[in-house]
Image (tube, rainbow, N blue to C red; front, side, top):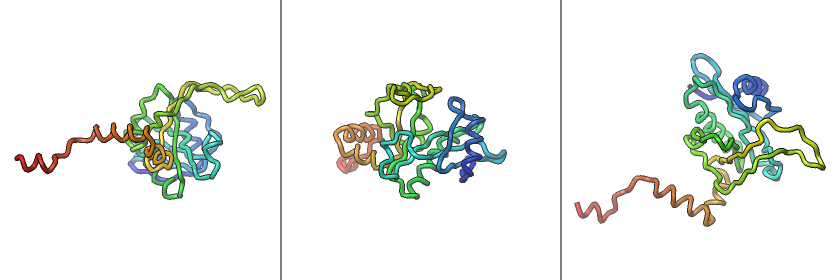
Length: 185
């Protein structure tokens, strides 16, 4: 399998046919596809953040959809990793995505993305009395993940919360023998 850039209109067509929950996507800035000998088997679409407050400086990007055929084993992880590398190379400050609360996030974790544990989504609709919007298809709770190089992650890791997260990661690492242990042998 390999990844490659693809035209956004082709990616939107694949999303419409393959995505299991939200096949309708209006647009995006760029897209990456994953393919094998059988051809294109999945896409990731990257665009401006849906939440307008995230893009005040124009340097934040959001992976708005990832749609992969089930036969493309590890295709989602490959796409998230490729999006992360491409966005970083283009000079983005933050790259993030949202997943539904009932999804495990395995592909994101495998690609090295970091969950924003402080993010609290209540779900709901975008419509307000002052501005009507059509009801959304999937209005449930969401979880947010960031690419590991994102400035938001770096800023969070310098806080107390970040110290707790780093401590958890360090505890999860395999033990490294100390010099005292080596001398005792």
